[in-house]
Length: 123
Image (cartoon, rainbow, N blue to C red; front, side, top):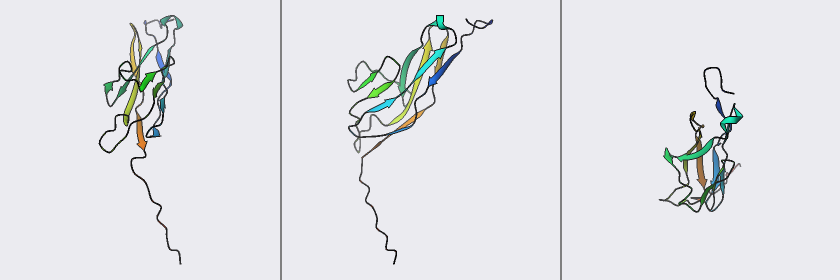
């Protein structure tokens, strides 16, 4: 039940975490939230990347699961094209009660260049 002032508390139970993934791999960012008043229903989850709302409808590589998790398949990364690397946030919205924004998760894509081991002469 809402507080005596009519407020419903909305809080994250899982927030996205910083991640390192590889080109061609799969990226999973979790996001779940709940209200302290069950009758308010589950909050709607949406995602932003670098401050811009993501549309999972027009991008076949990205999809949002029923539990709010963002799944990016076949991660893309090249020297001049890095559409999956960046800062991600999820938003939880409860109609008529407002929205909250998660922490920022930084996603880095590894595999753009190779690292060579340098041998050391310890004589």
